[in-house]
Amino acid sequence: MRNGMQRRLAAEFIGTFWLVFGGCGAAVFAAAFPQLGIGFVGVSFAFGLTVLSMAYAVGHISGGHFNPAVTLGLWSAGRCPTKQVVPYILAQVIGGIAASGALWIIASGKPDWIPGGFASNGYGALSPGHYSMAACFIAELLLTFFFLVIIIGTTSKGAATGFAGIPIGLTLTLIHLISIPITNTSVNPARSTAPALFAGGEYVGQLWLFWVAPIAGALIAGLLARLLYENDTVVDTLIVEERRPI
Image (tube, rainbow, N blue to C red; front, top):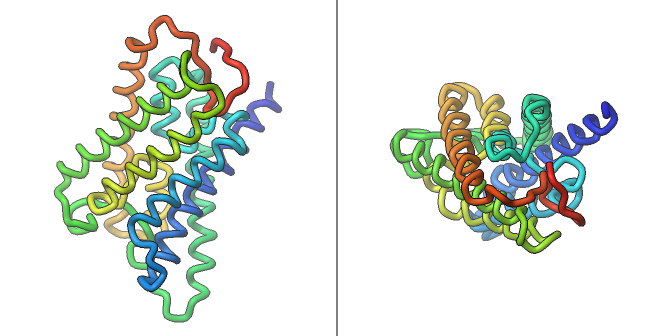
């Protein structure tokens, strides 16, 4: 049992590391060079591809959460045991911080590099489009709500077995296409915490929104799922070969 939990936590650490390293790395490195033409669209796909690739790589081990909001949303839906919630969130946050540390070390190797916001999230003056705190809160809550609805729906009875990673990854891409100009896109407290700790200052002070709004949206989606899938047999992994009850 302990061995199984260690494997799950390692998978969550690795998956979240890759999400932050790949997604934020695209923002820190490639998006800084306009001549590459990556822009918002490229960064959006980078985040989506990290989840898609890790869902298939380690999703069958841990469920492929890589996000405290996803863990809490699945818990709210009855899809994640209570005993896994805190260990999963710790593994995700530590994985994200480790990835941001690696990005900082690599990025600082460029002589004229200026960290700026370091791919952090923000509202008001720290929002890419200077959106208000209320606007950013609503955006993060709604986008995380629909992210969880799609995650739960595509991994429930009747969904195509083994293909959930594709719509989930594409959904995260769409979420970024919508909200990069608003908040620089969080929907993931671990993703928000990691770069903010390195950017410091006001970015840390605004972290509360990027924990509260995504988690609220996820919890609401989980409660709704109990009504939508009340009689369903569901699974706790994104990529599965056999459906089984929790």
